[in-house]
Length: 333
Ligand code: G3H
Ligand code: 13P
Ligand code: ZN
Image 1 (tube, rainbow, N blue to C red):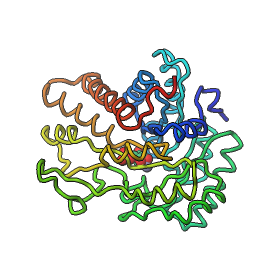
Image 2 (image 1 turned 90 degrees about the vertical axis):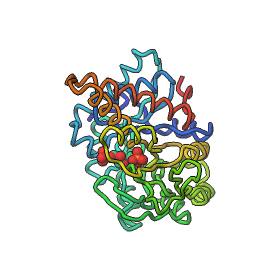
Image 3 (image 1 turned 30 degrees about the vertical axis):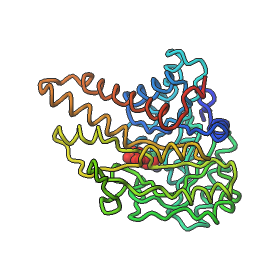
Image 4 (image 1 turned 120 degrees about the horizontal axis):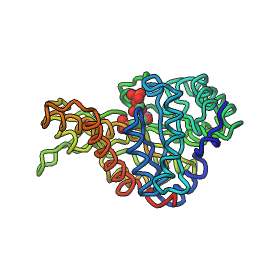
């Protein structure tokens, strides 16, 4: 058993309470490799932003759970080396799909876990979430749950359609499960194709696709039911057009990739939404950089050259999210 406290990590409790009060959101960035982690920590340290490092089940399988945990521990030291005296870093399991996986993460030094039982019937979602909460809380590890179903692929759970969270269920769910935060479905989804072109309108001036707005009425109703309760938004990448264009012009194929407009996320960050999940944008930035270097210098075969540019692109992206979208800069001085 390793306590996250020994690793210099923090849980989400205080962080979320401050974010709700302060009208900003904490960035939750997924990582699978060293360059992503370096970029996240540099961006957070330079902007003094609290940050959540997210590890999915797939990331654990890809990178090895032991290595990832020591990387997170190293991240705390790296942050200090960068001059961030009191880093506020959470190590979080993203989309945990079983009690065993969540328990293993708690035992392994994670400070926060998500149990995503949103694909199960309501009562089973409550029962499994409660079981994880009862275990995690013994070690002061915070637990995120999910109610409602996002469209697209949720790790190995897939759903073709989205089912918005039912506001009339949230009080019962949060009370009986004991979760610390709740991921809700209001129209976001995972990946780089969040809407089909048919769901969008076209801007007559630019010809670009404009997605439909998020269901802020559902968010408002949830907040009315659960005043001050931490709400989480998954699937919140904006799919920056500059990266999509770069990838497409350099031999890639991402037709009509579309994300959540930043102004919608800015609005959400000011509410009780205190954690905003971003993974796909980092993947796009990484891919754009790799394509750029390998296209411009076909003879290049030093991974540090293309992974190095990828790291620069991601650092810029993370800083932009922190400063211009979520507003979490300077909140962890
Ligand atoms: O919500 C899903 C995250 O983007 C993680 O994706 O399972 O491919 O690591 P992954
Ligand atoms: P995106 O695919 O929009 O980046 O969402 C990531 C996410 O929700 C991770 O849990
Ligand atoms: Zn997610």
